[in-house]
Length: 261
Image (cartoon, rainbow, N blue to C red; front, side):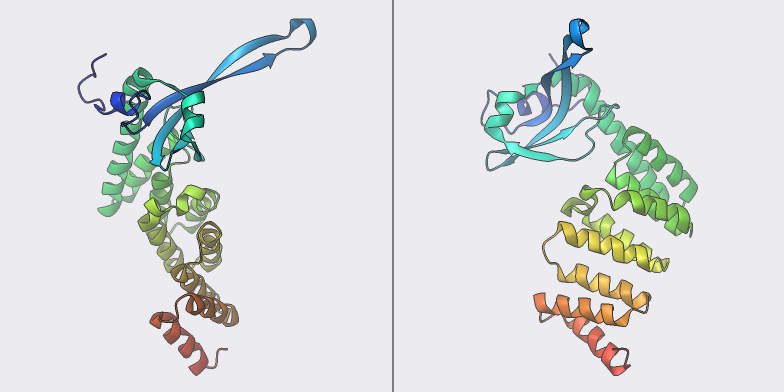
């Protein structure tokens, strides 16, 4: 079937599981049998689930469920490629004519919101970010953007609501969102939301290997809370990982010089 103008021309070969040289990428489905009712009225029904899949290399495939609006949303999972090929069926037409346009709509909405925020048009940005969240409540970019918009306006309570949503989303702390993650942490400190900043960076530490920059950020948040012993503790942890971390060393020397520890 030919693609409509403007659709993703790479979707069909990417989903052709018979072409082993092509990377798997697109929408796939699985089927499961569920039982409805009890006793003599019990019957079986086949339930179809849809997933966005992307091959990672090393014979592994990342899968993510589609939400009710047909965009990839929620936790991702990595499974062996052999298992994927056995259990998942390609849905190229569904991807091309339903899912891909929805994904593009979400991307364009967030892009409009980002432009409004960068121009200081915070109310227009808020409206567009909320439109994006109607499509995908777990959109990391939309959540970060909305949180930053609220912080730009000094609306701490609204920013706190977004913060509480973000700290529950593992994907918020993935490498691809590093820029937004850093910007949000800076925003928390600027708004003197130090307790939230501590929780935010500690959550990131749970999901990453020891990172001296994250430890340093925890120390800065504790400094804002005037918990100087905790500040020093995290500076020392950062220096254990990277003894050449000059900024952390100077910070620690400052605490000692001012007799704060």
